Length: 355
Image (cartoon, rainbow, N blue to C red):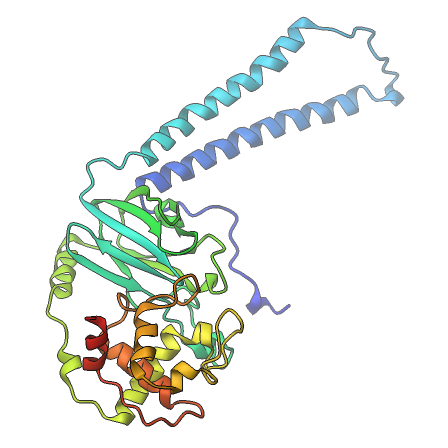
């Protein structure tokens, strides 16, 4: 194997950038030190016994089979070691579960295969999706530095503020895991699990879904951007700006096909494939779908807006804008061997959304 293909050499856990993650690291080091000390004592004693009392030196076995003092020491010593480890462990666990007095509360919802973030006290919410180009995923381009660990919209948090996380899911079981924050919580439909973090250092921290949630489990990265309080305030102001008047622009077919292919590759190609062939029977082929080329067009729009209950097809009504959905449907109805000539407008999508 060439040296350039070897993984980064590391023999320890990351220390993290939150008080909890650093407490976990210190606890890990304490446990490792205790284990190493026990191993050193036990193996040193065994080596000494093997050398000092070997047969070639004429050693004779003793004839006693019970020693109360030795048995007491053998029983009490492990108990004391466990107590020494349990006290700091319990303190860390209590600290991990203390979500009180949070400055910001964020609801995190796992959804195939993206994360939805809602700043409950800021009236801001958005989806965070994998942004690795499909060319890299399919081996048609060189993999980037953050292959499968990059998103279109990171979770932005201020440093030195306590952030409370409410983690849940709207489909299957996921797990929100960012090692450097010391946070790992399962996202289970119908349940809300809590956690918290107070980031101490500016930077970008990455994680992934840590639960085998389905075919695109590897496509649910997590990116947290820690900024100063001033930068966070500026970011909040930008999020509250009125949306770009893109939906009022009169599009042409070539423009919408270009945008549609871009959005399709980002949101749909992982399941229905770049060429629309799908992964039957879980994800049906779009190339032979009567919905994609048939009439009425409203049926196609409703399918994208509402999804298919009980299947892997999610509802995109809350995830994509009217313009994005219109572009995707236009692309699907005119890509591959399809030639319907249907140009879908955001107004048509809005009409179906309002029903």
